[in-house]
Length: 437
Image 1 (tube, rainbow, N blue to C red):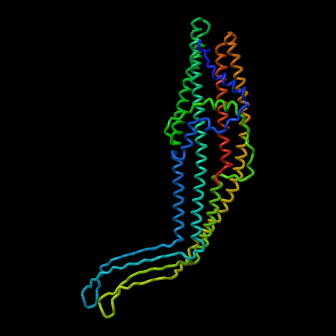
Image 2: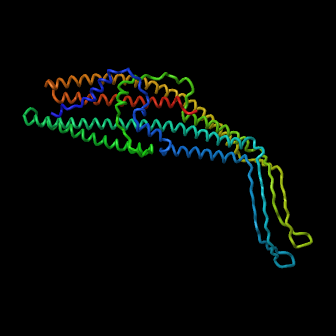
């Protein structure tokens, strides 16, 4: 009967691995056990579309800062013009003459009450925040890639188990049909076995659809063109069956931060600079100006024009005496935003601390779940061994044997999924503690 065909490799491997539990200390990095994931991570900065966009965001912020800094520099304008002039002079026809003149003007801000420096500082803060956010985005994207990879591995393993279960259900249906021919079972039992097999086929089709969608999205996100192996290696099996997981030391009393907190800090500093700009709006500004320009005039005793060269050097003062409460409104707006951002910052820091503590608690809980899942796996293996003996001795039915076999497979899947959950939470916890400074 096909129902008793079973690969003892997995069973023997699970037994030997559990016997060696605690004798090794494997590396606690998921990519270490999946070569395809390791290669993807190595090339992630070159291939991933979102990382490429992040680099351009940094370039954009740098150019904006360059534009803001230019306001404090010297500006030079050159103008050259040519004219054909027709003059209506007394007692004669229109007089036509040609004129070509040029001019060069330079301007350098001298004193603007810190307003220009404030604009440059705002651009600098924006650039620093973009660089920090880009580094954080790489870390977050790396965690996302690992998480998606583990989901695909888990789904693929679940699909493999579902296909194996289908084979067992098919073998069970064939066995029941043969028993029906011998008159040992009823038609109802045959139909029940057929329904179980068809339901399993539907489940497999849905798992295949989800796996295909997951792989397609993953390949697009990472921009990786080579073949990706999502299978579970023997090294990883040995790792999750043997490694002694333990929660990290609770170390969140120091400085912790995230994108939102850093963004709020930048916004607070920006409003401080906007306040300086608003305070300087109605104060006199001084600029150093210089220039050279040409013009033409007629001599008093002649109709022939003469070209003049003129040089200009001096100080220009601009004073906005009245702006209809524009600067006052800008000042009050900056103060209101600054107060709002300070309140949001306090709330975000408290929330982040609670989230970090929650992640640490989840790590502790998942560690306990892993230990319990391993004990459950040991019991499932013992149950399967005993059910095999009982089945060969014809003391239990094929359904009982099938149940123990499937229970062992599901127990192993639960352990793998718990291990993956541990890695996901651990990555988030480390991201909170190691935000780029």
